[in-house]
Length: 627
Image 1 (cartoon, rainbow, N blue to C red):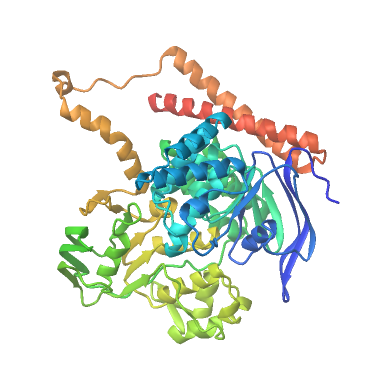
Image 2 (image 1 turned 120 degrees about the horizontal axis):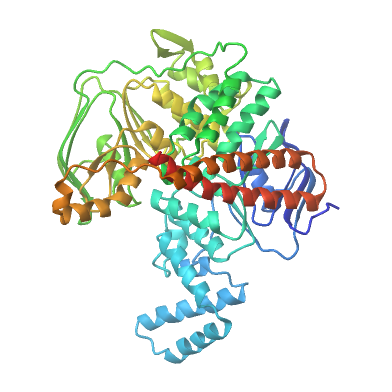
């Protein structure tokens, strides 16, 4: 029997699972405490989805124990939720086994009947009295808010007739409305637009529930999680912190194990730059923390020099004319999605496309790719322009064909820049397909590995204009880093449609904004620039609308720190440094402590330090702006 600490919602002990001759999980042990938000990370095929299925009861382990606390509610949402035939949205989002939900469901159905003219005033009044007596109006209001934020408004629709993305949102609404003690989520941000992702991020970060999730969204990991469990070669490695902390400690672990200095370099070359460039809206790190990352970076780049070939992305030669769009208009059934849009794409253009679902983003891409004929306007492609188009829909492959044979049928060698070529097998290895995997039948690859294969199918052909429609779905964090590195060196034009804010921030230079008005706006900057601009716009507009005479005067000299503020600034730096040292010591203590109560006390203190650090860092940043 597995011992379960009273504060632990879940204990997993020596969990193992194999498929054929492949060990997916090997004696994995971990626990999830009340309020803990745990992310599972690892390359595609490392066992993340398998572990979630075991925790959700869909699959059984070969050995080991999974024990949940008896009196808690556990809900899960995996990749492809299933619904009963004829089930309405209302039936799907409320749980009949929960008496409170059953009352709210009856109330919503009664309101729907009443809206069609039915004489059911007594029924509605009786349900209102039941809701009053049980004090359920807060729950009803929260349910409505969740449904609205997820874009679910028609509760009478049959769920099976809706798109996969709509079904995923309905399933997500259902588990959130039920307010479980422990929630298990597999890629919750897939099929959500950016506004909804940001709402979900805020909701989960403050929700009083324990959480286990798999996600490739690194901003999501940074803001929501406080513990990361990495699966690698069947083993589990725990990191008591968010994504930035994981990056730091993972690199340290790899160096200490002397397993691969190059791996540490691969992580830090790109990720550290992101940590250092975070805007204030995402919690810019204080200087001492940047210095700590810099120290680790220097360790990662010490030792032997790498012989890794820089994976530059060689594009086919491109002429002056790339792609010209003139007065493009399109829509369906009288609904105009695009109106009089004109733009001339240049070589090395890097465009991101953002906007809510249903505003025409994918339609726009299909028009550019010739899959749709515009209602009006012209699209003129340059003679030397060679598109590489990655679609959301998964390609069908011959399941019997090996990975390497499929790749070689496209190209035996791949250009990697500066006149260099490498064998296609080596190119696949650069994208984290080990040689033994390359000789497996495609049918035995995981879903994420097949998506990666679909992406490589395009890149191997050396296009000079890449159009990527949601390329980050189902890709693991390490693959995303490799892809970003590739695209940063890409010598051609690039269009990205993505809900992955991190991905967009790193790669695009301006945005096409789809806001539902059919007028596409060209915004100069990346996604975070755009969000910051939205926050600043009302203030800026007010100043322009009502100019005052003193606004025409020379700007005053910027305010300096007062003596009191200077003193506070110095004290904050010392306090922050002290808290960081205490936190580091507690984390070290946690790694060797075995007493459950002491572990819980340490965990609570680490959480309190993290909150205190957030407050002090925010004030430090305000003062540093003046200093």
